[in-house]
Amino acid sequence: MLAGKVVAVTGAGRGVGREIALLCARHGASVVVNDLGGSGTGDGADAEPARRTVEDILAAGGRAHANLASVADPRGAASIIEAAVQQFGRIDAVINNAGILRDAIWHRMSQEDWRAVIDVHLHGSFNVSKAATPYFREQRSGSFIHFTSTSGLIGNIGQANYSAAKLAIVGLSQSIALDMARAGVRSNCIAPFAWSRMTGSIPVETEDQKRRVERLKSMSADKVAPLVVYLASDASKEVTNQVFAVRKNEISLFCKPRPLRSMTKLEGWTPEAIAAELIPSFSPSFARADEVSAHVFPYDPI
Image (cartoon, rainbow, N blue to C red):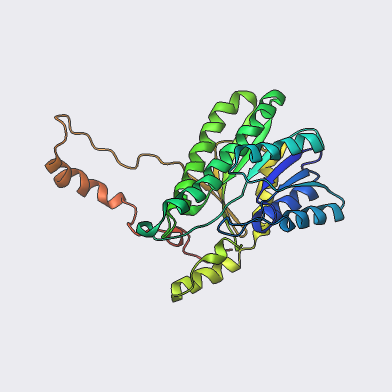
């Protein structure tokens, strides 16, 4: 499906990103494998993960090039796209997958941990997408595939930085889709359910947490890659401004926020009237206060 295409995959040294890079190559794409090689919290650097993914693609007869830049650095992000054009002559799809985690309960989260996660996820997605945009506009085609999370779409405990970044990425993708539609460029999001180094940091202290981790372990990273290949291909040229989720063999389409209920008071609202009339009317439609993805997906992965 990707013969003749050139794709850039960030965070492609391990986990979901690696599986995406491998499947894109198997479908004929030339792949820029970007990975700084840092730890799960973003510390350090190591060329080995990106190098190993590239070697595996080359050994299978594909074409790939390693890039070790940080997506959080605008110049580093630009080098990813420059590598695609210099090595393979063009860029057709950007997969913004790179990420780190620095989890903490909200009141204990440091400014440093807040910024670090926002920089990699949100600013990184912006930086790489921005660098690819002039090429997409000139050739009047291109696909952005951004990775969001149910931590942002639904919510999660101890992940204010990650949740904020991942929901902001949906807003970024929507704006790109609207702004770039006239140039034939599309932008979509995927929320993956998969066991990886990042999900491996989930605590397993309670029975519920243990069950959640065992459920995640059954959802392998390779299950996410087919949807990415499709969205990067010309077969998806009419698909843009959408949010998908992949949960093992199940693919879901998420709705955008829309009004659930509306109530009008022609004389205007007072705080007392809101308490007495509006909230009793609205409360049956309230989302549960403690809702996380396990409440939305309470069944075992299929």
